Image 1 (cartoon, one colour):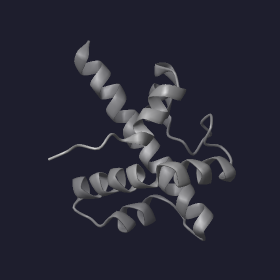
Image 2 (cartoon, rainbow, N blue to C red):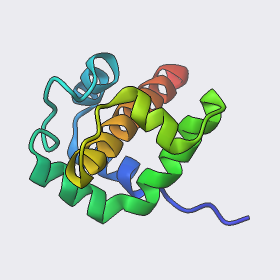
Image 3 (tube, rainbow, N blue to C red):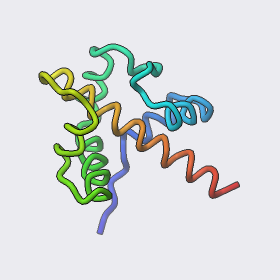
Image 4 (cartoon, one colour):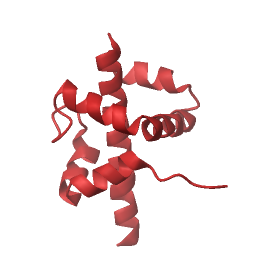
Length: 108
């Protein structure tokens, strides 16, 4: 089975320092995280990485034994397409940052 690279995870690794990703993992994206503060930024990230974001959301949902949209609706107040895209980006960014930080800790 061929594994597809998670382009959003690669984006995080290529565009943010490890300390920034640790902050994202610990404090989340809702307080403001570089490149994901404004809706135009999160919409652009969603549009560029939609496939990877959905695969990540499915992985998160599987962990909780829920459907992807249920997980998203529990985490965020979604009122329109913009907040929908924003919420997926934030949730996946937080989850992937935690993965990156945990992987780094395991290697140490």
